[in-house]
Amino acid sequence: MKRFHDDRDWFFEKRYGLFVHWGLYAVPGWHEQIQWRRDIPKAEYVKLMDRFNPVAYDPEAWLDLVQDAGMEYICFTTKHHDGFCMWDTAHTEYRITNTPYGKDVLAMLAEACHRRGIRLCLYYSCPDWHHPNSLNLGASHQLDQPNPGDEPDLMKYVDYVERQIRELCTNYGQISSFFWDIPPGVNIPRLNALLRELQPGIMINDRGYGPGDYATPERRVPEGRCFTKPTEACQSVGHQSWGYREDEDYYSDRLLMGSLDKILAMGGNYLLNVGPKPDGTIPEQSAAILRRIGTWFARVKESFYDAEPASHLTANKECLLTRKGNDVYVHFPDGVACTGVTLQPIAVAPHRATVLNTGAEIRAQVELVPSWFRAGSYLRLADLPANEMGAETLVLKLEFEDLDAALKATAPAPEAQEFLL
Ligand code: GLC
Image (cartoon, rainbow, N blue to C red):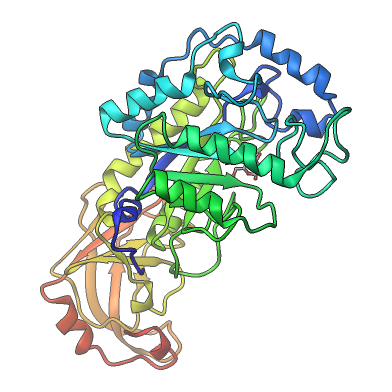
């Protein structure tokens, strides 16, 4: 993957972060887009402000969870599509400091992040269902028509956005990335330029007012075996909503582990989302998921950090490979189909092969494999705990003496040449 060779390269070192969707929509606890999806008039929706009083909000508890989960950064929704601002902005009355709670929740989070050295990233929605000048003309994630009394005016709205991002990038210390949401379809270069001016080293995503630095596949694992540009996939623990949903359908650990494994093995980053409750706490079920995934992640993470995608080394599509020096890691994001796997055309055995999850040794040998296109001698890994560990995403670790020399000595296998270095 091409790096930037500037301060943005933090992105390639910190690979796993927490996404947090929190705003007024936590109060009804249905979906972060309840205003739009249930046609709630603005005059009604704004009343949620009087009920938003997150007295149990404790950014330290959030960050304890981030660290327990093995995550290294956090991306916080400063303003979602409803337009409500979760910081003490001077540019609208529609903000957290005008609720009964009255405190700047972003300032509290920023302070805690900076103290602990956890990188802080900000989400900001381009659509806005509240600001009088925003465009609500039925385009993607816009209301079908302006609210009564509104005066849609793109350039006036952009001035508001500009004043707000200036605040966000001036008053809260270092901001490591900016997550615009819902591409507005207009190019206004001065906005990203301002972000970079105020926060040198900031990463900017691809959903804003101009091209950014990284791609953001959402709730899906893209095709392929290796990303060709910086990528941060995002996924929520809940199937229905990003914001707090009282009656959520939670994804299985298996699905989340598999997608995290695949995205990281392809060279991407992963942002896993929770929606805090109206009192400011993270739902226990969501927290438990993060902790369980974290236990697995701690055991296999050496296969991602400082490692590079190396799936081109094998023609076997059942697995993905990463490589760090002379070690090769074999990932099975979709589960292990059987108790053995062959890594054609690799024809050299490692001196040690283990299940990274547990440290248990497995068998690794070069032998004539009958089952592939044309019989040949390839590296076969056997005795995999396919059933015993079926609930976990398995990663194997293969330690070679001199991997480059070994690969050079490997004859290209028929039909597999395109996968070779
Ligand atoms: C979508 C949704 C939005 C959510 C975002 C997260 O764009 O509209 O509600 O915040 O995805 O990436």
